[in-house]
Length: 135
Image 1: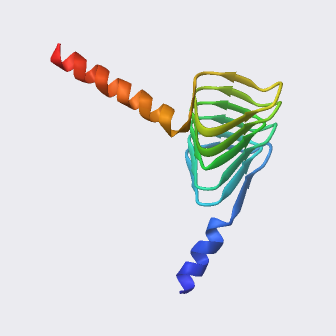
Image 2: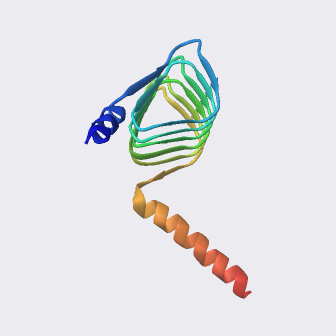
């Protein structure tokens, strides 16, 4: 029972990467993460990602929820809700269930929303591959 309590506490943890901090490498966390510094690498979390105005990520993001105010260069894959604030700059593709974009946010890339869109893209690729093999 003691180990279960520790795991529950870890899931609720909040990790902060402050302004002026630079990390090179991948980050994985079961809790929430706030980045006000620079990350060169991928981030995979099962909580919420908050990227502050001074935050910069050069890599892919995988999270349940995310609120972006800073800059991202990479693929943003959010299973629930992605919020792009007015100061956000995203250069890369977005895959999310729900998307909120404030006026002023910049986004360059493609966006897929909802499971139906993802399945349709996968189905069409499979059909095209099947046709190519038979031809």
